[in-house]
Length: 212
Image 1 (cartoon, rainbow, N blue to C red):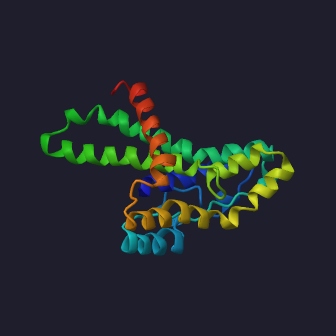
Image 2 (image 1 turned 180 degrees about the vertical axis):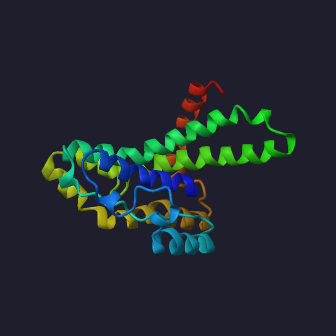
């Protein structure tokens, strides 16, 4: 989880730097040091509170600062910066899958431990990639939609960012929690909106790596 989130955030800053904006770089955010990306509330307090109250975990890292005015082509580059995080997670999942092919060469006691960690890496990275591509600001998918929409519509859509986290918490965590306590555990939007694409993406990577 730490590797997945850290590289996700660093990728945003690195791509922004390559496209003309050094804001994240100057603030030390193009870094593989997890401490650089910790948001006290989103990374520590909220996940702990949700886990203790519902058993689920949800949170976020400190947003990577990007001044889109510095980008060479702001509308196009906004999309590329947003895609950098999820694409990095997909690449990490692919690396974990490829490494799984070599687990059998390890000594017996280490095979299970390494295999479990690589499997967890695949699951976590695919979840982060798909979840972050949901078209809801301030997720990466919301930024992509903002960049694709005509400027005036894009500005209106981006204005939903202040309400975005509340929408996500309500739809994906509060409602499933209430449904579960009402005996309606099957009504879980996370399974449909995120779980199905994750499974599909996993199957695609399995075919690409020849592990299916």
